[in-house]
Length: 113
Length: 110
Image (cartoon, rainbow over all chains, first blue to last red):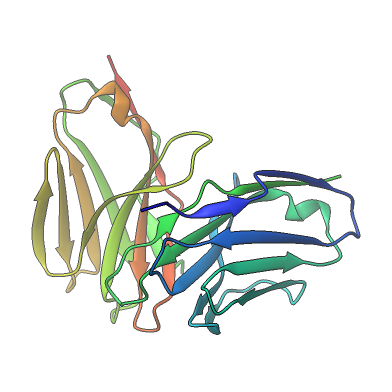
């Protein structure tokens, strides 16, 4: 099976712009989660989608949003970018059961200048 | 109080020794527990998962869970230089949310 695919791998944006990141989960997985990773804060949970519905949400401002399509692919959008949004954004998929582990993609490295 | 806390690192062990990593969690209703390994510049990869009290062994890795004490640990036996990485503890609550600890960096000295 192919793993979790995230695009693009690297992104450079300017403050105030918006960005959309894409994630294709492992075939058959219906849950997609997004995390932000920075050296100082570690892995911070953004949100999780299961069967096109947001099942959980972390403590991020409304500038961070996401959605999931009927084929389980997911996108994450960040509007009005700030310097502090520079981070590695990780997508992970799972089959959605309570005991199922997450499988991570390679991440998108976002740099905001 | 953080949802998931790990023992502060870095942890340095000689090659062939046992590395012991600890993790505590705050939500008593947590259902499942995971250990991930993350090499520098890479994404986390799953090492083990456990959801019943007791020990679970997989090769050189042993996960231990004690729900009464809200404690989960990972032992790495016969540590190798390739085990040098950051180890992340993750805990899933009843609402399916998976929370991660800050990670413990392990260095295995040859």
